[in-house]
Image (cartoon, one colour):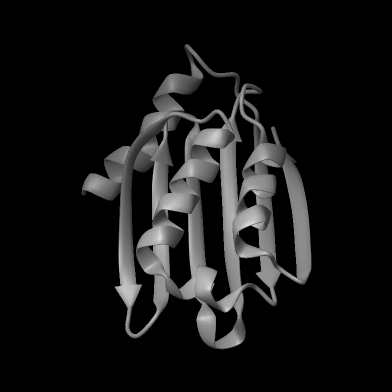
Length: 130
């Protein structure tokens, strides 16, 4: 029930503080630095910092560590959400950032993660959601 409440929270804000529009950044990072992917605590810290670098407001976060080195993490934002799913066995991870309104920067989020993960290949798409 907690997750449902948090995912509905941005919809409530849309009528007041945020415009009914959004940007959804979807990124796949391949050939990532193996140590960056497998140091779970540092990766969580860097993901939170990248989210803050975007200008988003963090409300809550949850993560799950898959043994030995996988991570799924979701950050609930006042503006919507950010998530990461790692696949260290493939030196890859999938990330998204969805924000309502226009105050957040997906570019700063992506730059911060690229600096930490050092991917050799990036597939990136940004969708305007209206």
